[in-house]
Amino acid sequence: MTDSQLTDSALTEPAAVAASAAAVINSAARVESHDIALVLGSGWGQAADLIGETISELPAAEVPGFHSPVVAGHGGTLRSIRIGDTGQVALVLGARTHFYEDRGVRAVAHGVRTAAAAGCSTLVLTNGCGGLDPAWAPGTPVLISDHLNLTAASPLEGATFVDLTDLYSSRLRGIAREIDPSLDEAVYAQFRGPHYETPAEVRMAGILGAGLVGMSTALEAIAAREAGLEILGISLVTNLAAGVSQEALSHAEVIEAGQAAGPRISDLLARIVTRIAAGQDGRDPAAGRSAADGGVA
Image (cartoon, rainbow, N blue to C red; front, top):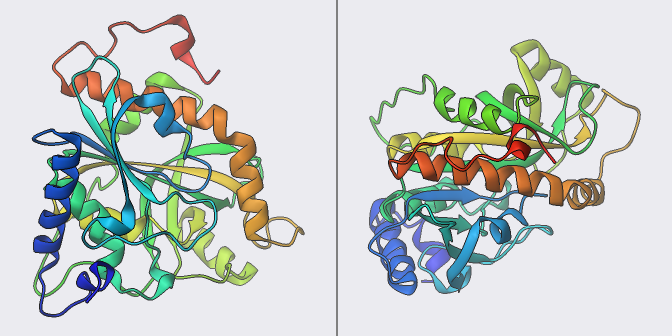
């Protein structure tokens, strides 16, 4: 049985697979634990290079329960990074599994469960998505305030009742707005994919309260809440959702928009993560703030 199959085995508890993966990651980084985990979606990958010094990098396929990504634009490694001079260590999960890959919902949740097992208390989830607001041009970052899980699935098994109130931390959204006060927020709707949403489905999502639509994040957030992580979600609007504009949708468009916005949003995310880490380290989160921190450069 391969490591990627382990997460779907009825004979193996997800927590045990996550603990095994976390032990490998912590050992490779020579740390007792990590502090902040990041899942970097389309367009967000450059942020890892701006956070600090990489102290370990593992091919995902060599870590229990992980496998190489199948989607263009996603990395394939698990990186441990010292966050500036904060004393904190970030775990960058560059091997997201999407629900539409049909590996099972355990595989989708494995990354965030591994982050919790590795010691992380905070999780930053990012993605590239479609936007319902015409004012959000491709390349606009938007904070996730809540989500609609339209996948008809859950990463929780059995009688596991988890409160999802304030799932996307208002405290962390406040920190993000300290870095960039112009950040909007919206509800994110996760569809199963891999096909894009129809205009009717987008209208439905809008009626239900969504401003963002995509194919990731919600299932990971639910698993992360069960594991006790505090969550910040940020979407990159890579295109207007179906029916909002007359343009046809394509994955190439998503990649192109992510590449164009990459340097700007990666700098934003790196500064947000550094501020969060400074606060968790017991330091004044505003210490060392430069004049440039008031908005996106």
